[in-house]
Length: 380
Image 1 (tube, rainbow, N blue to C red):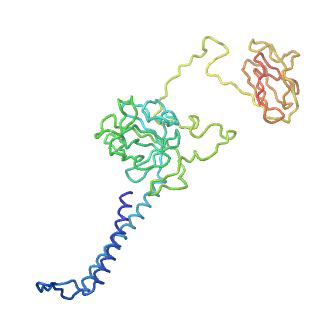
Image 2 (image 1 turned 60 degrees about the horizontal axis):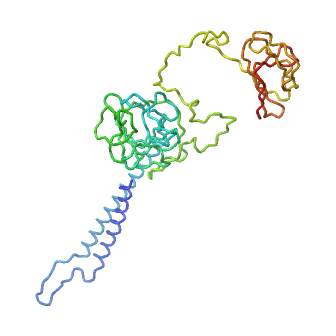
Image 3 (image 1 turned 90 degrees about the horizontal axis):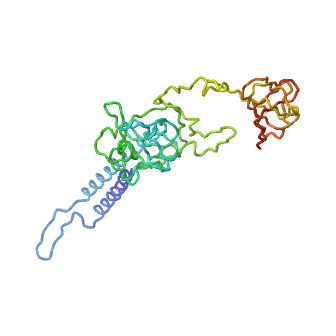
């Protein structure tokens, strides 16, 4: 891009020079007349006004031709960059040096390193195509662009808000199906240094095993930035970084491990859980607990009484006179006697306070609830 700017400056200079040549050549007094010296009369063939005009016309024509070519290049560059803004993939990188996934360590605050066995947020990147060969990498760990720091002399790190030369990498497709990355900062290959034991750095001149990566497409849709990448190498930050998340509607952030794909490279292994861990009859596997959630703050207030049955196997429908809480429960809501954990959360009349009880039982419609030996926790 700097070369393009320099070309435009030179273009302006050529245009100005052509104009100056036309003025000088046409406007010199006595052009075409003989000139003499005091000692020897010498007649010189001078440039005629016609010759001067021809030179000026040629210079201006050359300048216009260069200007037209530059404008065409600008249009082509703008089109390719605009197309690149939409050409974004979500990927993970697996280093062939150790078959570990590349992570933006410490949520992007530390250098990239291939030391992970699973793909989560820190191991996920936006692969943004600049042109047919070059890309930017934006880490999902912090929404920043990966940089070949110090012109490639320092390890790769995701710490840039706007991409430039140091954040540009060439994708090289190897014959074995793997991919290598060449940093445009110094035109050297990115390597998983020390067989992956050290951070990634661009310091190699030939492709070997440490310079090969599997690029794993995660099949996620990335919104097209509202401001496309431009020829000045500016870009918007990660789309999720500018939005304010409502934790009541979206409990986990978009980059949370709970919202990230497992990935094609995930390896599933048997958990080998015992059917009855430790011989405990209360913990058969697999087992799913039914959590009881009551969100009816306008329901009739109901007493929750203590029951000593707990997990003893006795009848939980029988309680004592100790009332632990008054909570709104619909009259027809029932939870029968069982050995289940029956953890319950009940929303109070203020619409914001939760009463948590366990194990909960309500055996009679319109009757009181029973609670075992775990106690009652109230949180606002």
